[in-house]
Length: 152
Image (cartoon, rainbow, N blue to C red; front, side):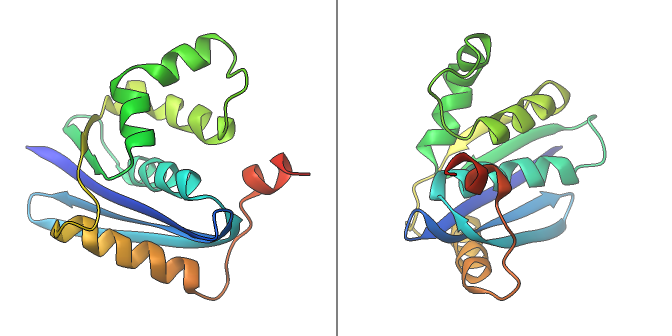
């Protein structure tokens, strides 16, 4: 039995206020996660959704499958790009803080990534899109320090 993670990220402006949404499913149980940020990018929110979902998992004894509509994230992991970026010190790469955070989780959960077409009627992806959009539009937006510090 696998833990299924569905994710989406959103940014209004790119950069602009943004948010992520995630759904974790396991053995009939379901948990939704979301958070908004005052200034960020879509790619950061796509990646952060996956990170937060993985950080929520309490055990490494089950297979993990991540469903995402982000080619940026899915290809970076499944095609091994991020591991080469790490070897080269992330030279000229964006979102280094988040990729380093992800790479600490990768050997624990060894997630399999599956790309899903966004806005194509996939129920969980559509729900994550709503979660991300609403989080970006919400009150009490957090500061994406990794992003805001990178543009100073």
